[in-house]
Every structure is written in C-alpha cells, then in structure tokens.
Amino acid sequence: QVQLVESGGGLVQPGGSLRLSCAASGNIVSINVMGWYRQAPGKERELVAAIGSGSATNYADPVKGRFTISRDGAKNTVYLQMNSLKPEDTAVYYCNADTIVLSGRRLGVWGQGTLVTVSS
Image (cartoon, rainbow, N blue to C red; front, top):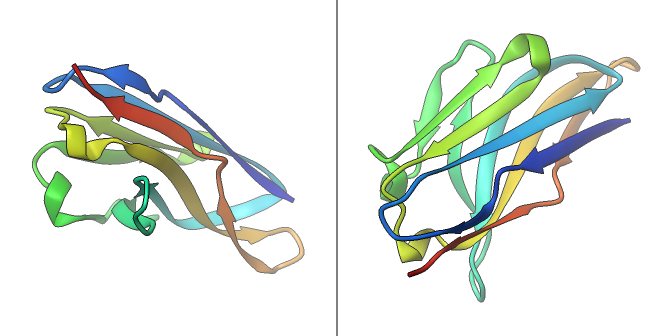
C-alpha cells in the first residue's frame, strides 16, 4: 500500500558530504513522523534523525551538528544532509515513515536501505 524509495548513498571520503532522499508513494492520506535509521555491520539498527509533520526534529547524539533532516510535505519526501562524515557513519541507512493510509489504518513502513561507506 505504501512504498519508500531511498537514494543518494555511496562511497565518500572522511570529511565529505552526502544527501539521502526518501520518497513515499501509495495510498497515503498523511504522514506523521519520518525518520532515518542506520545499521552498521554487527550492530543493531539505530535512530539517526526524525522529523514530525510540524517539522520538529530529533537527532542522535553522534550526528548532532553534522546531519540535517528535512522534509517536503507536498512530495512526501524526507532528506538527510550528511556533512563532515566519519568512518563510523558507515552503515546501511533506512528510511521510515509513520503513515495513515486510505483505509484509515496507521501503517509503519521501511525503505529497502541505501549503503553509505565513508572511507579513504
């Protein structure tokens, strides 16, 4: 019913920047919180940043001051601007959306993930 398509991952040198995008489509009535999570090899998935429908934001401590989350409500799209990247930011990044669909159901949806590798 709802799909999330992520883009923008890749290989970047330490200190570099990347911008991730995640577009939601399907039978969406509204989207509450949209967020980015990441999972590094051998570690659990963790929240990176989230943004509410009113644009309130929340960041994990390791990315504060370096990452910025934003959203375009008209396009049902969320972005993650990542600056001053570090090798420890290497992970698969997943988009998540808390949606209300046409049937009235509340549906949490995950994207397929996009790999970010920070290495020289």
